[in-house]
Image (spheres, rainbow, N blue to C red):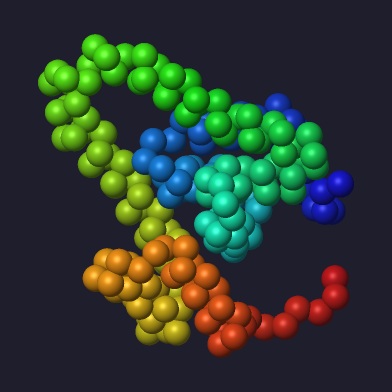
Length: 186
C-alpha cells in the first residue's frame, strides 16, 4: 500500500498523467508539466519530492518519466494508481509513434520534416530550457551542488563521459559530501 499522505482519485490521476504524456520535448518538458500540476496548482507534492523522484528515475533501467509516473502513481494511489499513471503517461506517446510510423512512408522524404526542424525542435528546446532553469533555481551560487553540475556538464560535453556514470558519480559525491540535515523519526 502507498505511504500515508495525500491521495488523488484515480480519474484525476489519469487526467494529470494523460495531459503530461502529451508534453512534447522529452522528459524535462514533461517534468515541467508535472511540476505545474502537482506542485504549483494542486500542492499535492513538494518540488523537492518531485525532483527527488525524477533524479531516482534517471538511474533506473527504463525511461525516466515512466519511472516517475510509477513512483508518483504509487505514492498518490497505491498499486492501482501505479497502473493508472503508467498507462496514462505512455498512451499519448504510443498513439503518436504509431501515427508517425504509419505516416512516415508518405512524409519521410518530403518537405514536412524540414518544418519539424524549424518549428517543433526549437519549441521543444525551449521547454527543456525552462525545465532546467526551474530545476536549478534553488541552487545557491556559488555552491558545491553547482560545482558538481558544472563538472558533469564539462565531463559530458568535452570528455563524452557516459551520463549514467555521471549520475552515479554525482550521487556518490552527494551522498558522501553534501548530506542534508538529518531527519528524525516522523
